[in-house]
Amino acid sequence: MTSTTLPAARQPSGDRQKHGADDLAPLLTFAAFAVPSGWLFLGVPLVLDLPVEPFVLLTNFFGLLLPALLLTRRAGGSVRALLRDTTRLPRPLAWLLPAVLALPALTWAGAAVLGVEEQVDVALVAALAVNVVSSVLIINLWEELAWAGFAQRRATARWGYVRGALVVAVLFAGIHLPLAFHDTDTAGAVAFNVVALLGSAVGLRLLIGALDRWTAGSLLAVALLHASFNVSGELLDTDHDWIRYAAVLALGLAAAAVAVRRAGVHHR
Image 1 (cartoon, one colour):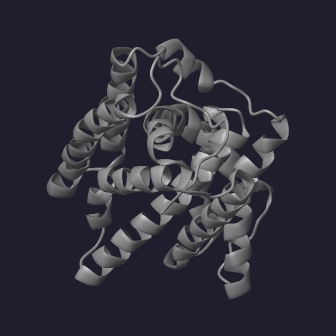
Image 2 (image 1 turned 180 degrees about the horizontal axis):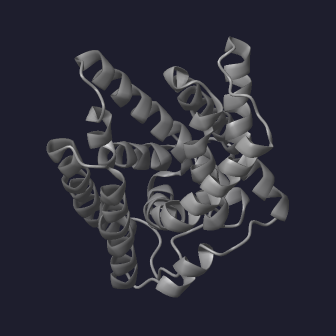
């Protein structure tokens, strides 16, 4: 059996205890609250045919951010340190470029190969930049404080980089599961959405786990990466959004391969 870890990986900010049951208990409590909260909040617009955006915000702040902050304090951690990570610039600073551009560039390249790309011009680039910045400030920074800063660092400390990312990917996909039923009218469409959700969750969490390590714990860089994934769908025809999911999975697997090679594989 093998275990893969990242040397000097970012640990849960300010926690007195960083391994074993001290990581597991807060993580299980977080999952037990966050996932059902997501089902509740995101299920309401599905049942009542309401716009989903306000309920995404409710999930983000009450299902993710609030429990992450409360559980950090309860575990003896520093909420201030965790919040500082949300404004921490990556070290080295050059990581900002791949964090923002890697997923949109790969998505657009894949779409271009198939002839389904959008024409890139100044207006589109400006719109994407505005969307990324607003998404980071309103949603992704706080979402990743909870997922990357609270949950994934604990999962990594307990199970290692790859298995920790996979555990969080399951939770991440789970909380978003109601969205797989939005704007669908066939079982096939729901099945496609679930597969796309799982695949992109695995790719995104692998990529984020590596980026958190490589940027010295910059949740700002992680949030920019997440936002750039979200807006990448605007670079291609809406009927081919699977290209975006394939791009994040491919980059996530590539990041994992690099991280594992650098860290080495430890047999036990």
